Amino acid sequence: MIYFTSDLHGYHSNICYGTSVWPDKETNCRKYDTVCEMNNAIVDSINSRVKKDDILIHCGDWSFGRPINAWRLRVRLNCANIIHINGNHCNAIRKNHIIFIGEDYLPTPIQKIFSEVHEAPFKFEYGGYDFICSHYPPQPSTNFNTPNTIWVHGHNHHKCDNNEIHQKYNVIDVGWDGEIYSIDEIINIIKNK
Image 1 (cartoon, rainbow, N blue to C red):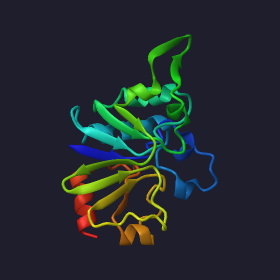
Image 2: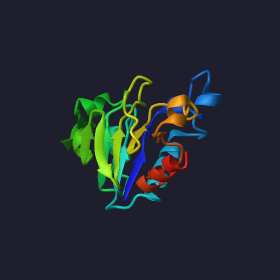
Image 3: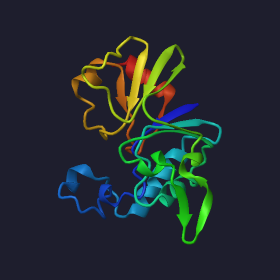
């Protein structure tokens, strides 16, 4: 099975309510007391649905902080096949940094902890649908709306779910909110719009 998520923001202290210094944290933070609690929730939500032989497509913003945090989050996930699409907070992944642990380093650059790493868009076909996966949603001027095209994205953290593009077209935000979406669930959501 293929699953989707985005914007895990592992180790991101400002998106975690208990550690955030953001003035608008009441409306823009995840309701966890600690980053560890948030990271555990991310891992549990993925491992409860996505099995070892499944494919997880992650649409950007994997983790924050040092490059080692990308690896720390990745090794806790059971899924062997993760396709990552770079987002605006993926510079360490984009630059393919080597992961350092003290004086030692992992023999693998960050990009190698994923099955594939792409800049957007990442496209594939499934069940008669053409999927376009990116970190950012389509712009109003984007010409993509054919009946068999589904645009899957992150970045907005579900803040734009009710805008015209999401309501009118086959567009869905899969940003992590505790839920992981299967490809069949996405198709059903689009069919029921």
